[in-house]
Length: 111
Image (cartoon, rainbow, N blue to C red):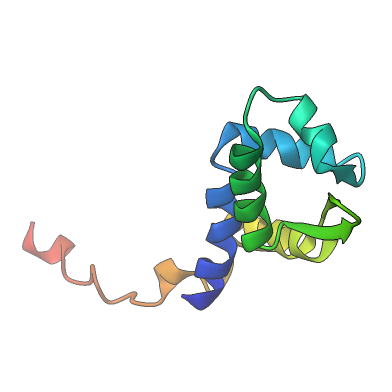
């Protein structure tokens, strides 16, 4: 369950179109907050909220340089999220659906 909780935070963060667009922008490399802000009609505080969510789930990392904050994608989190998504969308021996295989035994006998 914990594995699901960790990874679903990333998907929840990407559930907002502007945050998904910010991640798309960062796919080209590190950007200053001011460069991200130029692309959107939002206040500095709204951008800060979006960046807090993206950093909070581990998808984005930040660094301070003087009075500016620079953002970039966290490649480790992206790699783990890709692996998780592939795992939950692929058939496997240890799938959740196979944990309790006795649940429907006998259902057909009552028909």
